[in-house]
Length: 245
Length: 245
DNA sequence: GCAAAAGTGTTCACATTACACCCATGG
DNA sequence: CCATGGGTGTAATGTGAACACTTTTGC
Image (cartoon, rainbow over the protein chains, first blue to last red):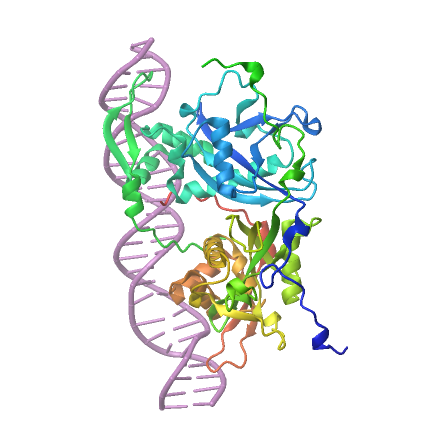
């Protein structure tokens, strides 16, 4: 087989040569937000009822199409704000889902975000019967590929809370160690030893005793603490060399 | 302010009601692949020269627009295969980049993948002067937002090699412990103690001594090993509860 | 006084680190 | 015989896990 160099016409490519991209306009791009909250010692996710005939009575994530003049982060912030009224929430991109038939309306490529909100700061509108907090553990199926998206985001959350202090976004600024421990247990799905948990948290040096106590609890009130973000930001990250497999 | 329920017309939404998505057709979707290789004890990445006037003499990742009938994983496998001839390579989605002005051709939302290939299995075509392996450490800037994409993928790689045995994709099936250690050092950017490294790796139980030796090395030849994937797959994952911060 | 959870240390097992000498091969 | 890296063990330190009793508050 003789290869003729001159005949090797380079295929136009998006990264190397000018191309007309408009013949590829046939997708919509969307974001879907997995909004986690912590309530009644349970990890919950905020879902909306789908009215699509294909998914009658199924629940779906909160999402929206991405406008032609916004990026994905902006779009997911917008969804959060429109649906919950919350701003300045923790939001992290996780994965983009692109199965060809994932949406009945046509080709919709969707980027999943997870968000951590304080359910105390968000009071569901009494009028809005469509939105509901669901315990994550009880969800069996959802509309579209949203169960897959939820599972993917939950796994990411589980990994992330082990190495970064994002979990505090799910609590009030002031929290007791019991609340924090129950939260870790709900997220990780395991039981933790109380004394070891306290030692470990205090050992980070980022837990501030603010000399306040719980109130109106039906038992001995615990101390309240805050997470010291500014000290955390200064601190140098350890270079963990694990090789766990 | 009186709220009139009847006047609260629900906005059509992609997840809850039937919508015509075609008015959102104005993006192209692409994939960009960060192809890592290990050569001369250095972590390298395969880049192509951009011919775009905006990025004259800059290097870019290998990528392509995603066809209307393929998903993102398929598209990135296709790019790998078309550019390197390699199939069955390790490929992992990392992040989707969507800044509005990230591409001069228009609105291109790009999903980044990283790939781990064995540079011995891939011999650069002598004719293809456009493709080149670059030491990751020496790259200062690239076309588009590709330096950001590279950094993001490198960080993901660094995290992932600590907990999953993907690093072996960068080596031959049979490897010496020296090669493996240098590879870990190149990826993580740190020095490791030789004796402790050997102990740790053997302690996993997944390193098979195959009773073969290195050949044609200018020093005492070392033993060759393989990674026992089937034993790894059987093994149960540990439940690591870190809380490192 | 009873129920519920707060607060508090020690011990043991295990994992990680630091560290130095002799050996095998090619040239 | 020299250069290069292969192969090996031990002691010290640090980390994680297990575990029980007394105290405080609301009711």
